[in-house]
Length: 408
Image 1 (cartoon, rainbow, N blue to C red):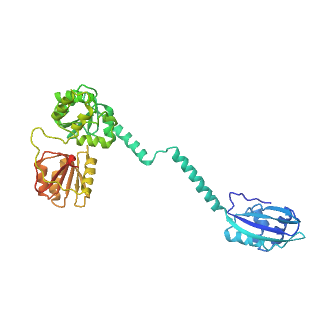
Image 2: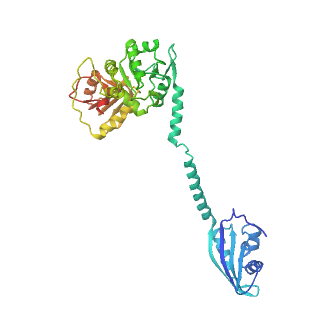
Image 3: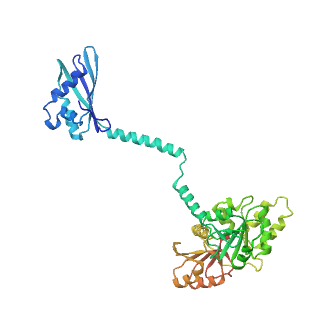
């Protein structure tokens, strides 16, 4: 007799049999083939279906009790559902097996694919749980790793001293001076490409030359070594701003949020040296120094200029702060409409010409830099309501609001 693989079976016919006497399994199987022969036509002849593998091995389980037999019949089928139902119904015409009366009833036709599907789902759950338990990195972790690798590849060597530097040091108007290569890498990781390292405690000649041409921020570790570097570099180079990592932390290990907070909290070299001098006589200088370093930047050469009272909604304040943080280190500017939608992003060098060309429809300008009087004048002519930047040297305006990082 032909067989059908359980793997290829689509349906299984489940039937029960009641026999008024004692019979064996071959008797039941013989009756099934014999009494359905010619009943369903040549195309559904059970012997031919089994020979071609469209009907599988018929399984019969018979149990005899008190002179009577009862049991179960299983017939696997790879026919379609209609043909399987016809074959199943044909079994119920059997009324005798050998000399005994018999009654066969079809209980159900099982769709094997449903059972397989249930198994697949249960097994998939187990596999997924195992997969999650083995800590496979998510897509964001993979993206971060790839981005970090690309940024590490961007690190360059600058000048005759071959100092580690980001790719934007040469063309950027502003640079950030850090202590070592690892600091440059951490800033690159977070998208800041205009950093350069002094590579030690002595200040190379390349750094001194750069300080004459660029707006320079010195960014050092939040420890005693950072204080010593501030003293040395401010004594031999033209430094514009100074900032430090949080107390006890190094620039190479701090997060993006801590980096941006430190850059927003930069102060003048004079103020930084003053605070370091005050702390020199204190046994525990860290917390006190950081409290001073976190104060808003003050200008030592002039009094703070009056500015129009700032009236920002909570949503505007949140969005302005987020956009300003995104721009740190990019030397770029966002142009916003009155719905706080970004109309475009331009380099700071093109900001004035962009405002003049737009003439109207600009609600706010956010940029990575310092607000000067000429930018304020241009913005007033184009009806800009807010100018947002890291710092400001401009005098107050009655027509627009000037907002710095410390205001946010």
